[in-house]
Image 1 (cartoon, helix red, strand yellow):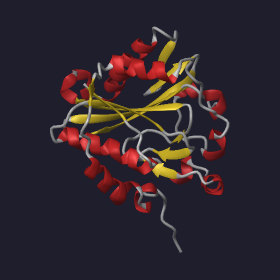
Image 2 (tube, one colour):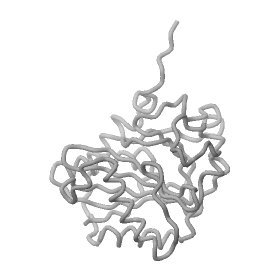
Image 3 (cartoon, rainbow, N blue to C red):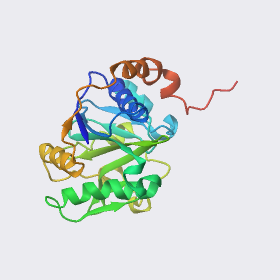
Image 4 (cartoon, rainbow, N blue to C red):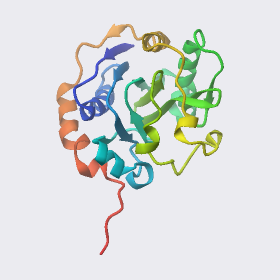
Length: 243
C-alpha cells in the first residue's frame, strides 16, 4: 500500500484532498494511507450533520473557530493539537468484510487495535466505530463509500485538550449507548502513546511502505473551490428560514 504524509495549508484543502484521493482510486489509482495533522481548533461536520444540532455557532464565531464539512458520515468533531488524523482508501475486493459497513469498521479498527495492543492494553471497539480505553473514546471514525473503494476517516487522540470541546460542540442528539449521556470531557480520553509511535503503528498495520509521490493536485483544487469552501456545502443541512 502507498502512504502519504501530507498536511496542506488550509483545512478545506485537506478535506478536499481526501475526496480527491478516493476519486483517483475509483479511476484506477492506488490504495493508500494518509497521515496528517491540524494544530488549530476547527469544527468539522460529518456529511449528514446538522449545524443547529451539533455546533455552538455563536461561540465559534466569537472565537474565530472555523466550521467546515467533510465528505464522510459520522459525527461532528473538534480538531486541534494532539489529534492525529488518518485517511484510508481501500478497495472493496481487498477483503469481503469491506463490502458491509459495520463489518468494514470491525475489519479496519481491528487492524489498528492489534497494532496498538503491543503498547496499550484493554482497547475496545464500542458503538459503531469508536476505539475506547476504560469506556472512554480516543478514536472516532467515519466513511464515504463509492462503487469500488471506500474512504475511511479516523482521529486518534494522544495529547488533546478536551476543555474547549463543550464550548464549540453541543451534546450530540444521537449517542452510542455506552456514552451514557456523559459530557464531552468525561467521555473522551487520550491514548497513552506518542504521536510518532501512533504513526508507526498505522504504517505497519497497513504495510504502507511505498511513498505516494504524485497526488491529485488539480482535483483537490477543484473540490476546494467548488465544494469545501462554499457556504451551500458547509450549511447544507441548515433548515430554510420561513416568513
